[in-house]
Length: 326
Image (cartoon, rainbow, N blue to C red):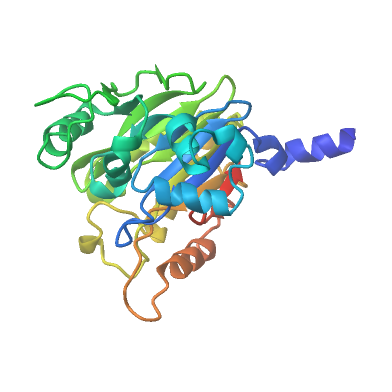
């Protein structure tokens, strides 16, 4: 037994060592299909409620998750008087974090808001203002928030979050720290979630520092590096929207496999050097599907990442409705 434990400890980011967070993918794509847009649920082991990380698609993803057995704790009896889908949506999602205010990251929240329970939406001040002024304004959609113009229906408390200051996600048992990202010059954000011992990073849309002419990803890597060195970062979700064949001028604030690998090499410098990222789970999100025959962008991006992966990281491609433990 001692030898087994020692082997696990020496193997870096093993599945056993990483048991700490439960993640369900409600939407994994970066556009085109309105039923499969970016959204993930995360909760700490031992907790009941999830934090929704973005909300491009909610109810379709919950349905897929139920079909795939990703919510084994939910039975018709436990869900009553709601359906299992309604129980998860209303009761098990305890809070939302919206990385930025583009539609593919919040359309599900807007559309489903008439049936939601009272919750807090955490986001940057810029994103809160966009939600208030351009979505929950009685023109685009009724005002289901607690602020803004017209009658305030009050389902959602829109809570601005200050950069690099810790906040708590209600009663979910998780806290977060938000860091700014640059998305074609537009504000986006990463949130570093933590329970009492471990951490998990979720990235909204971001371009590479070199193209964005920023140091924001570098700042994030400096933060994550020590957590990786101490084996406290259990994983991350980050976008890779396009394959390498898409020119830099057409990325519009997104990553390709080549750019992500280059950024991860920068992260490696802050994590302990060569080999320090071996086995680190990285969920690839926000792939933009192609409508061209025979163009399977998911397969191409996966192949390009694996071919260039001399870092030893563990790339994960979650399907809608799939559950993973980290």
